[in-house]
Length: 207
Image 1 (cartoon, helix red, strand yellow):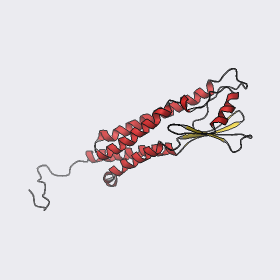
Image 2: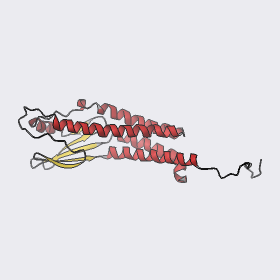
Image 3: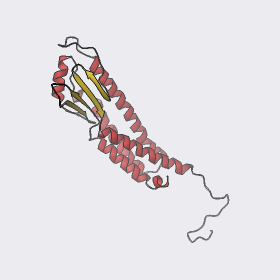
Image 4: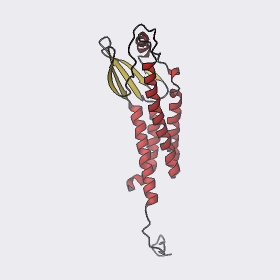
């Protein structure tokens, strides 16, 4: 614990750096594999945009009446970079101001972002798999693409996974939690000095 207390500032600075890196690294991805596409079609989601084989995936999804995937369709991609940036700044601020509330500020924001991100992703996946155009060329039963793991949709095997950005954001949350625990442990430590004892001077002689 003493090691954590001494390095509290380093923990918070490290958390801020990880949160900043999470802004520019991929957070989540999906790969679609079939006999026609043995190497797979990939979609990679960053905090502020989507990359990958989006045009090919949209062309295939058109046959089953799925909504086109595009950046402007996701307001979350405007909020996530702002939230992660605030977490990074909050961690650096907490490193300078040793207060419990300063530690709680980025940790609370991080928990809120994680909860919002997971809810939003689950909602979007359900929406894409259920809001199908009834006049599409190919009719399939409504489905929900997996957030994590693998399933089969028509002739495509779908593999979904979290990526480096998510792992770094989780690491940032872990470092802030360690810094908070170190702060709380320090403040709750009882004093061993007897009541009425006189504090020694730097020379060792009681004042």
